[in-house]
Length: 195
Ligand code: HEM
Ligand code: HEM
Image (cartoon, rainbow, N blue to C red):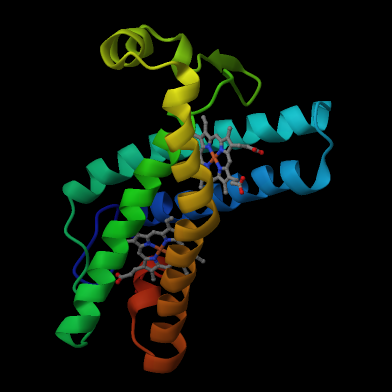
């Protein structure tokens, strides 16, 4: 298996980044819904689940940064035969996935009113306590944290978390399965196998 992409397959690094991101998205959803559905407010479990959500989300931001840098240096493998419209839809779908992988952690971090206890190893200060918040938002825009976080929370929770990310991921997985089982081409294998 080569580290770099080839014309036939994604390389080991692109695959590792792809499947790690997918696993982290799953962990991000499990932690936040576990918190909301199975824990009482103000309990240690509620706090732990929140902190896991924040820690996983920040890890996604780091992995995605590496992924974008790697992707910029690597052309994707050749697409499977298909109409112009299908290729355009796949391309736009991937771009939208990259966009939510960046915007979700960003809105999450900027709009959160607590420090992140990163996997309970060390603390990452909340944006509100940083000098960037004071200079850009507090002094620059003249906004309180409450006014600043409201739209970010809405985007993070209502638009992205509850709807858009689910739609994009479900569409993406459905497309991968359609290629594999109906069209029987190599689209899924490019991301999973070495030949
Ligand atoms: C790709 C990464 C992320 C995804 C997919 C994601 C997704 C979600 C989802 C689905 C919710 C629940 C929405 C609802 O209330 O129905 C949520 C809530 C939340 N997220 Fe994220 N998030 C991510 C990253 C982050 C990051 C990096 C932070 C902060 C450092 C963060 C902070 C929060 C907070 C504070 C809540 C509210 C928790 C609650 O009310 O239980 N998120 N997020
Ligand atoms: C079970 C879950 C998943 C499956 C089966 C899957 C499958 C695939 C496949 C087969 C490709 C290659 C498509 C092609 O070359 O045309 C791909 C690419 C991609 N996937 Fe996934 N995926 C999954 C989850 C995710 C998740 C959760 C995300 C992000 C939130 C994601 C983001 C992407 C992106 C951005 C690409 C384009 C890669 C590039 O060219 O840079 N995938 N996926």
